[in-house]
Every structure is written in structure tokens, then in C-alpha cells.
Image (cartoon, rainbow, N blue to C red):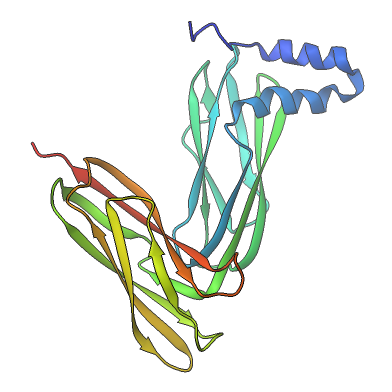
Length: 244
């Protein structure tokens, strides 16, 4: 049933556009057949620490009878690097377009347009919008908390260091938020000078964590005045291996 429902022809979409207005057929065509294959068209990374790992995935699904082919992908900013796992899509096949931020060489407000150009079944271009703010005053090492492979039922801890180049002498991490009940974290201040503040983060994976992949984000809540910069994400990755 799924193979029939929603299985459109890109030619039918084009014909509809032509019937609506010949002069705007090209724009209508690009917006209606190519855009419909994307699950969303924009992403806001929010605030990201300098050097932190930050990436996002757009899913592209060919919902048409004709084969679709992506001829090129580009970004208007070197801060965002597009990577795709496949360029030729038959009916119902999907591609994962991953956008990776370069948070080591860039900082400040960075917006980018990702241009995805199709050569089949008809020429078209879809523009994706990326937004982010990379903080230069907060550095997290390592850039992602990696648990690796952990046996199910075992409590495991990993540590990370957060360094703030003082812009405010009273800057602090107030708490660490987790949206995963199996992950908890705490931040302890270990050094404060006139030029920087250093915190040690301890991230604990509880023994209750079920088998499977861990791909989460902890949120460092600071006392920054601006609501936009008060929360800094920290990626957490790993695998909980089921007992054999």
C-alpha cells in the first residue's frame, strides 16, 4: 500500500506548475518537486562552544517514480561542511545530508546557505539554511564525551574540562541539564584566576541504561546575562552493549 500512496511523478508536479503560471514554472517546479523530498529546510544549532563537536542531518527521500540525482552540494560559509552518503536515489530511497560545523577555525555569529543541486529528473536547486553562534570564550575538552562500548548494567564515568576566558569575574556554571534519565553530570570549579575559570565535568552513565547507541546532548547552564548564550551544549556518545 505504501508503494502506491504518495508515489508521484515529478513530471506531474511540473505540469501543475505550468498550468498555474508559465512564467513562474521554473521557480514553482524547484520548490514543489525538489523541496518535497527534504524532511526540513533549516536548522538552528544555537550556541556552540569553541572546538565543540556540532553536526546535524537532513534526510532526503525520493518520493517520485523517476530516479533523482544530486549533482553538487555547496555551502556559502567555510564554517559548515556538507557531507552526503549517496547522490543517486531511486523511488523511496533516502540520503543523509550531514552538516558539520567547524568550531575550531570560526567563531561568532555564523549563518550559511547549503545549496543542493539536482540534475535528475529535472534541474533544480534547494537551499537549506543553517544558523549558529560559536562562543570564543568557552572551550570544552574533549569536544565530545565518548563512553565507547560499555557493557549493559555497568556504571561508567567520563570527565571533561570547561575553560572560560574571563569576560565576567563572577561567571559560573550553575547546573548541567540532561534529557536522558540514564545520564547525569556535575560541574565542579577547580580554578579561578583573573583571566580564566576552569570547571571539571563528571558525566555518569547509569547501570540502568538500555542496550543501544547513545547520542545525546548535555546542557551547561551558565549565569550569562543573555538567554541565547546562557546554555552551552555538550555532545555525549557511546554504545551500551547487551550481555551475550
